[in-house]
Image 1 (cartoon, rainbow, N blue to C red):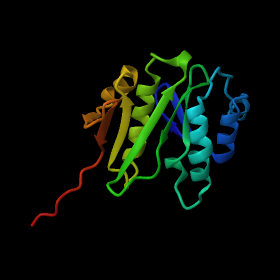
Image 2: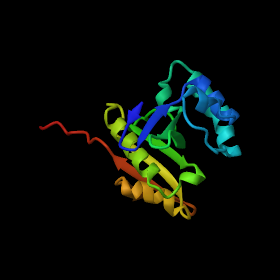
Image 3: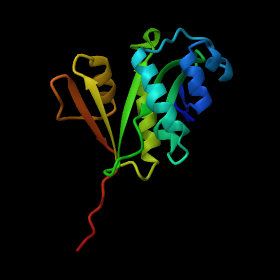
Image 4: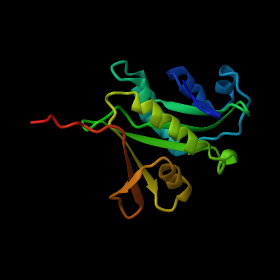
Length: 175
């Protein structure tokens, strides 16, 4: 668990992910949280069932790079959003981050703070050299989170901005 100023960020176990998908407040009950009005999109439900759950169940993988991390407001004792890494670091030491804030908690700076907390966590992982992300070009709130966390815009597509934050630099051996 990551503890920052206003938030706790908790990685969910396999059984907690199953409860998350049910959207019946059983997860909130297990975590001793106040109920929330969260919903999950069909896209997230599909990702959970087809990718995230199988990856979390795979004991050969570090589940922290595959699971959802729930973002909890300390003041309200409620889940306010989620983050995840999209798999373990690649050969270049890059991990991709994804995130979302529940509607009723948007525009309060929670995700900017949460991404900052995940960056600090990632800095402690020696295999992680950079964090990458993609945002829809029309989603100014999403790319504002990245800008406030010092990500740099890199090449993109017609629909997406791509982002990168270098955490560690490889030192060249002196000759």
